[in-house]
Image 1 (cartoon, helix red, strand yellow):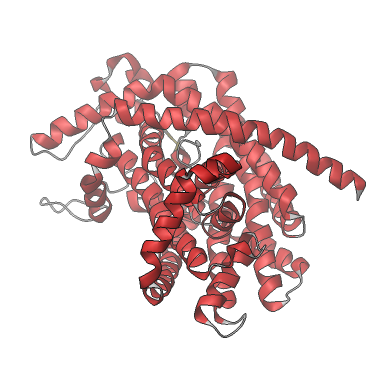
Image 2 (cartoon, rainbow, N blue to C red; image 1 turned 60 degrees about the vertical axis):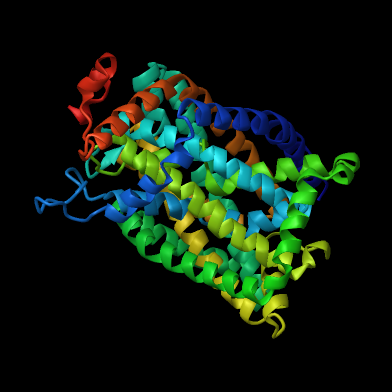
Length: 478
C-alpha cells in the first residue's frame, strides 16, 4: 500500500510539471502559430471540410470514384472513421467529467479554445502525414515518425516518437480505456472488473489480428452510430433544461474568466484541466491521428488534412460539449463524483428512474467508444513498430502485450492509469510539435496549391514536382 502511494506521488509530480506547465504552454503557442500561418484554415475552409467528407467515395462526372483507394482498401472516410474511433472514447465521457470535477465549469471553455485553435495543428500534421506517406503491404502507412525521418532526416528523432506513441496509445491509453469500461460496468451492474477485463481482452485480440482493414470497417459502422445516439440523448436533456441554457453558458464563462476564480486559484485549474482533457480527447497536435490520415488514398494531401481538422470539431464541439452540458444541467458535479461515474449519475439525475437508463446507456456507449479506441490505438502502435523494425514476430508479441495491458488497466487504480497516460502523452506531443513546427512550411505551400486549383474550378491533384526539393521523399505522389 505504501509503495503504491509513493508511486502515485512520483507519477503526479512528473505529470504535473510536464502537462500543467510545459505541454499546455507549447500546445497553445503551436496552435496559435499554425492558425496565423494558415490564415485560419480551420475557420475559413470549414465548408470545404464538410464538402470533402460528404464527397468521399462518391463518383465524379466521369463515373470514376473520387479518391477511390488505388493502393490498399482504405478510403478517405474510413481513415477519418479510424481517427474518430481513437478520438471518441473515454476522453469524451470520463475525461470531460474529470475536467469539470477538478477544474470547474470553466474547463469546458478552455476545451473549446484548444479545439478551435488546435484544429489548425491537426490540419498541418495530417497534411504532412499524407505528403510523406509510404506504401505498405496492404495500405499506405505514415505519421510523425515517417515525416520526421523523410522531412527532417533525423532517424533518432523519428524512432523516439515511434517508441513514445507505442507506449502512449498501445499501452497507456488502452489501459485508460479498459479502466473506464470496467468502472462503468462495475458501477451500473456490479459487474466484476476482472470479468470486464477478460471480455475486453479477448475481443481486442480477435479484432487486432485481422489488420487495419478490419479495424477501419468496424470503426466506420460502430463509432458514428454510437456518437449520434449519445448526441441525441444530450439534445433531449438540453431541451428538458432549455430555460437553464443561458445560465449554464454564463456559469462556464464566469468560471473561465472570473475575478473570484483568479483570486481563488481555480482559474489556472480550469485552463490546465480544459487543455489537458481536451487534448486527450481530440488529439490535435498530438501526433496520433496522422497515422490514420496517412492510410487514405486521396488526390491531394490537403484533402485529408481538412477532413482530420473536421474530426477535432466533431470530437470536442459535439461529443465533449454534449457530456459537459449533461453534467452541468444536472448540477451534481459538486457532489464529489469523478470520471465515468459522474457522467452516469448526471444522466440518471436528469432522466430519473434511479441508476437505470442513464447508467445502462452510458455503460453500453462507453463500451463501444472505448473498444473502438482500443483497436485504433493498437493500430497506431503497430504502424510505428513496423517503422522501427518490421518483423512479424515482433508485431505478434506486441499484440499479446496489448492484450495484457487491456486486462491490467481494467483492474488498476484510476489515478495511476491517468497519471501514466498524461506523462507519455505529453512527451510524444512535444516530440511531434517540434517536428511540425519545422515542417509546417510544406503544409502552407500545399494549402496554397490546393486553393489555387479550387479557384480554377479543378478538383485538386498533387504531384511531387510541386515541391521539387522533397520530390525524392514523396514517392507516393510521383
